[in-house]
Amino acid sequence: MIIFYDSLGGAGGSQTLKFRICKWFKEHDISCALMTNDKNDNFTIKMFEDLNIPIFSFKTKNYLDCYEILKKLDDNNLKVICFTRDAYLDIEYVKYKGSMFFYNVLYCIHPDTLESGSKSHKGILNAFITKYYKNILIDIIDNKSLVMMDHITAKSTRKYNDLNDDVVFPIWWLPMYCEKIENYEEIIEKSYKSNKILTAGRAIFPFKGYFMGLIKDFDKLCSEFPDIYLEIVSDGPDIDKIKSFIDSLDESVKKRILLTSWIPYDELNNKILECKLFIGMGTTVIDSSLKYKPSIAVGYNTLENKAKCLFYEDVHYNTVDESCKDDAYSLISKVMNSSYEDYKKMSLLSFSNTEAVYNIEKIIPEILAYKTNDMKSIFNYKNVFIYGLYNRMKSKNNKGN
Image (cartoon, rainbow, N blue to C red):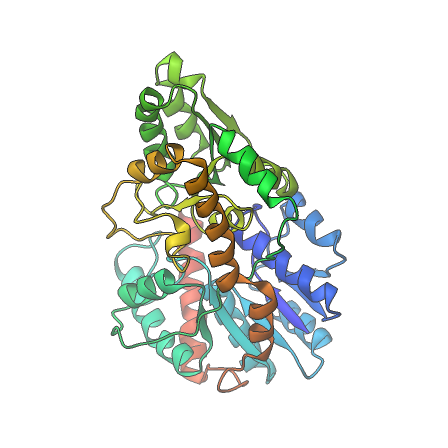
């Protein structure tokens, strides 16, 4: 039995990742379930209910409920996969209090997952949280409970927590279905004739602030390519900033930009098939490459449009960090100006190079076989006391905000 413990809010990359893994499990008769303290997103919930994936919810910090759920699902071969640090610690606390023994893994799928401290806390509280997190992180690493999705996430974790470069983490590359499309040559030919650039992602700044840099670049691209179009599929807390920026552009540019609200996964796939070039980060860049699309993985935590290369040239990096100073403009121009033969070569390499790294048929067996050093909780009486104090302080601080 594999249990995913995470929020179900928003149909973003984390949710589609869990959906793909659960789908693979169902296809291979492996039991799985979702456990959450946030069951508010009907769109996401329906995705999993359509797969007949059980969803167990409990009130935040109600550890007795959490214990009862885990006890009910424990089949002597239980593995819990968490996606946030607090979720992982919640499970370790329940293991300690309930004397439970099973594998618990923290799978980091965001470069900022293990940023020390908390931006929402100030002063003494922030210093306390930072020290607490750094101390317990060593125990998590020593137990081999910490797994990264890629080199960028590993690098940022070392940076945030003052770890030496020789600290190496296991990596589970994001598992993707890599099915070869039968009419791929027809798709490549149609894509080459298209003049559309597509990007998709949640409007959350500064992490995905690249939208602003891309729109700025597109303003210049319109002079170089008279028939070019840009479609942005997005929604989220900063969507109004994107709308305002588009509205500030000249009418001749503005009419070439289509802003589409978030759409179901299948509809997004169809839009990917129709574009000539995809620009983004994370799962969407991998997904587009598997549909024979030349793609550009751009940087995070910046309002500029930065990239080091076309994605197929180094598929181990589905985003780039703040150290990247190269503009994506020249890469966009390269694809839009390419001959058909060059475009076809880029398209074929996009699929083959991506499939070699992210094939779900190779990665999921690795996840199933993975074992931490110990199944017992990393907590001791001292950690439990600090953890309880930390949660009380955090709860008090949140009420004051």
